[in-house]
Length: 133
Image (cartoon, rainbow, N blue to C red; front, top):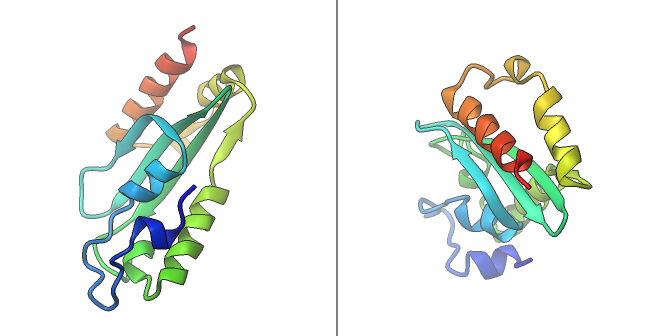
């Protein structure tokens, strides 16, 4: 996996207005399903595949340094800390079957974004993918 320095070689503070999570999430593994809320703030949801293991990551973001962790980073070291934190928050499953079980049994309605159409579509797409042979 690349470091923050490698992903953001032109990092400059305080002119950190081009921040995007895209290189970070792509750097964490093979993305098979991805969903982002279509708004100024919201959540991203990602289903990763790594060999026979699968990972699920959900994280929130915003439109300013007061509500977005990446935009709040003042140093490249803070970006690296955020990257490490996101990586540690991926919920990994030992198999496709285990991931499918989680996606089927998790009570999505109780999550903070449970009523969002983007979440519902992500779960539906993930179930379809995980149910395939």
